[in-house]
Length: 396
Figure (tube, rainbow, N blue to C red):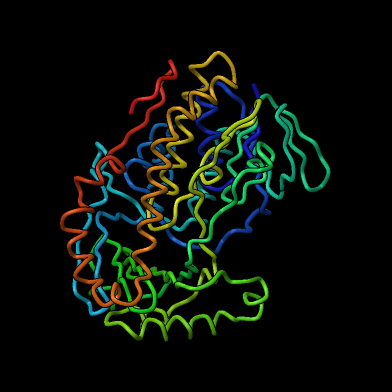
């Protein structure tokens, strides 16, 4: 059996490796040319996502790329600490959540797939797919398989092919920026092995110190979606000036970090995808952000995609045919992922308080992190484990 996996980010290579583990030959079709995705943001894979990587034997080769990240530490605009959220129970071998640069992890996973003999085609942009498991590339080539898995993200071509009326990504009101500052003094004052988040007066900021003394950081800026025209007309230097101005309204390290840092992600509009009615048609199905893209504040986008990879393979392995496997996959995943997407949407709204809510935000958020968003209340997310066994069963 041959699977065409559309997308070479996080979900695509993981899905291809999981399918190979159940005896399906997979081909990865990545739209970008080789070496075309070096910039970008950082994100965290919590233990539920790491367990999925481990289930397909892919954690070991990428572990050293990650920065151990045991907590999220939240602070207000005045620097007052609002709460600390542990990022789930470590794996059995002690591995905690790990934060990665997205492009580095994606490249490592593609390389891992190649090492296993999986075909990876760069510069292979899919422009159409049909339910009989064939796809058309931008250069006119047509490829056929026994099934197609769309792992092509929130703007998925495969999702539109499955259901032309499928919803599109919903802009959540935040523009995302990210960068790195080499060896700043602030690295020594930030919490160790933790993301430090600030609910600022004008934006939401995050910073993570790395073991080599650098600090990676991001800013979520509440504003309208950034157009292509504005993006083309605004230099990285001007974006940094804007971000510094926003950060100067708050106590804390971010104005200095951004001023002295290098911008690696600029003007990225942030979307989520709350609910997709149709997940599969014929022998074409979807995984990852193509069916359930949460806002970044959920911290679960990549982890859910990795869970999908394992559950998809397990569902197919235990079913009589491809279409039945897709039904089993949807039944196993829909409730969990849509609940997490909804949680992420609520979290995003807390990043941009206005009026009286803004003035009371520190007090409100302190109560939230003390009584509502706690290690116990989040355990259903972080401590979830999926496994793949020869019988194709999925353990919750």
